[in-house]
Length: 415
Image 1 (tube, helix red, strand yellow):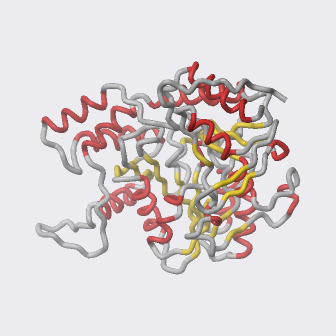
Image 2: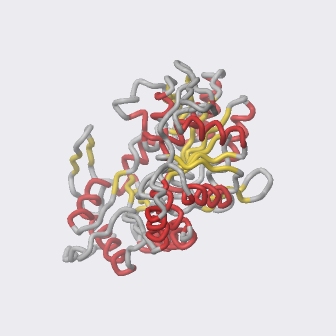
Image 3: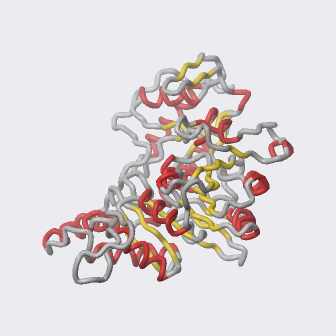
């Protein structure tokens, strides 16, 4: 087993998990909005951003909103989620994927994860429809910018007459091969689609998100709901519930400028992923996987998964963790502590929703057959990945020499 030197100097400048990367155009667009006095939820930047993102994602329409969560909430309303209706949801994701289900009074039913992409397991989804055949809405997320197995998931949903809400918050710029043999951008694959421009995403406006669709009627409806559902009347007429969800023209200016550089952001993230993969080749770990034949990720976050045999003892409570250091072995808690000590930011893998105190009483569905997981005989894949995985510093401004130091820090944990 590799034995690394313990004498590693901390990084001089902090390396973040994934911080905003500005280029100059962002400031120009914001300054123009201020000089023109378009400091509101309308203006040139919003119009331009909506056109840019829709064209890039391959949809006809985009509606700029205050957050990715707002976009997902309006996806739920468009999908017709009702009180006490069950909705199938990705399990290993951020809770923003799921919370909008509850906003509308729905009941999340969590579908286990699969190892090939760390996303919703189609076999688990099929089993969920066997148990709950009346469900008509499925919400899935593309974890860390890696597309889910969309061909299988879409086929299952069409068979059961269910609509798909695509949470592409982490996956703007990722693509997947459709049934037609062509590559399609994440954010265009579902019936209702959402992307995020939050501060840590591949493209940022500091906050914000967009609803994406090919339906003009849906775009008009979402735009109306997002502006307090005001009717076309000479006074303030309201006939249905609305929300203050429109994006600011200032935020849109930042995202508009950032969007001009999405290709270079993705390329930088890809290089980070490849360097980690190469740097860890002698360690008992792997990086987050994707389907090389059908998908191209945006490499938003590079992650690490420790082999079971190389895990030292680790116990996690609700808010604290303990581990016992052991030669030749490590665990996510130890690695994250070492990164923090050396001025680098990592994160745990998303804790699966069915393990969260808020949602642990909701149904959780795994694949019916143990053979699905014969590789490891694991029936709760999300919990297993959470136990053994972590997110590595993936900031696209990270210098190669800084990443080399981070790789050495990780290696030292297995010394």
